[in-house]
Length: 282
Image (cartoon, rainbow, N blue to C red):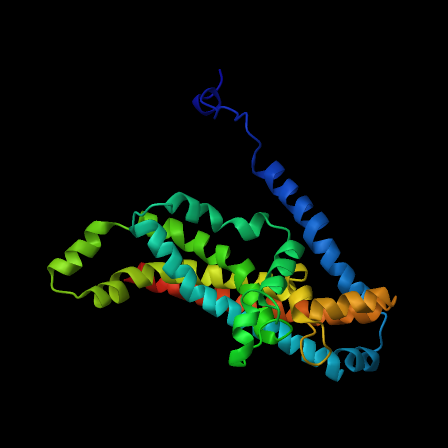
């Protein structure tokens, strides 16, 4: 006689189980992420410590690091503010052409980066539509770090808007109405009720925009002018090394960017985790 436990066995699911799903996930990440990144470490290991340090500490390389990281940081910071404003307008207000504006936010995702770079250069060059107006004022955009930042703002804005927009849509309006009824002003309601809910998606959008900016090439290479020590970005320097068949030098520069980006993303994820814990505790 069979036991009651065996007669009530759990029905087998037609969907893949945990083992198969985990195996596919590990295989997928290994092929597309872990193995290529490991190749950077393996290729760089062909350099001696002295050669590695000479490569990554070169004045031209250091200047390219500064330009890439600083312009990406400033662009992500600007997108953090204006991305929140754009998401707020799209969620909280109704106006003619709203769907068109909403669809234009995703344009940088679909537009080839080279096309974006050529368009921005044509507009902001000294003889361009906007550049010709700024030139008499002493403001030069194209072929300067300002132009690089502008290009990174263009390609990074959707990351912030699309991470904040769903959270704004899911916020309960009754909580805001209750705060107003209790005497809270608009700014205090936003600061104490709405902003704590938006901090995690804002940090996520900032991290995505910042990471995209560090590795951006197509939209920046045209508007930057590629002047060594002034507007040369690290991805362009890596491409230059590859064209010169200096594969070890290229991977050494890439390794520093990889480690720095990983540390910064870990820091941002830690801040996001802390903000999530604070929101849950409250």
